[in-house]
Image 1 (cartoon, rainbow, N blue to C red):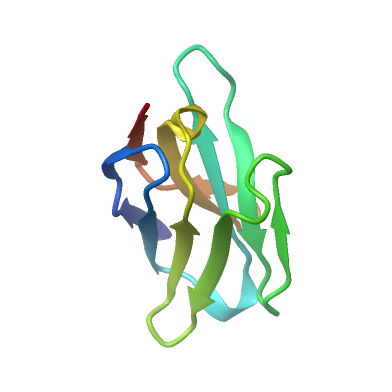
Image 2 (cartoon, rainbow, N blue to C red):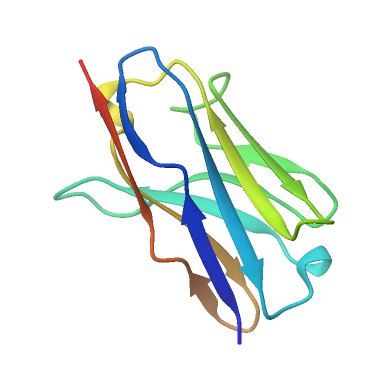
Length: 114
């Protein structure tokens, strides 16, 4: 079955960096996009960044120039490099893929202190 497992979250000071990983299994990784979302307390889940099977990327305006999304086909994994973190980047980060339906990981917490 399709599985996505995020890791790499944590507590970091404003201006710091984190790299999130999304390990996938149970589907043909090379044929599907990997998308990162986040959800802050009391807010709706929002798209952060996405990378297609061909490597094309998109970013939310709020993270452009600070975050970089990538993927490693050999490892069947996606990554989100986050630099220049701000307190408003705090939340639970989820990776997701769509194969006839949306699949989600369990999420990883990112907390950015002022």
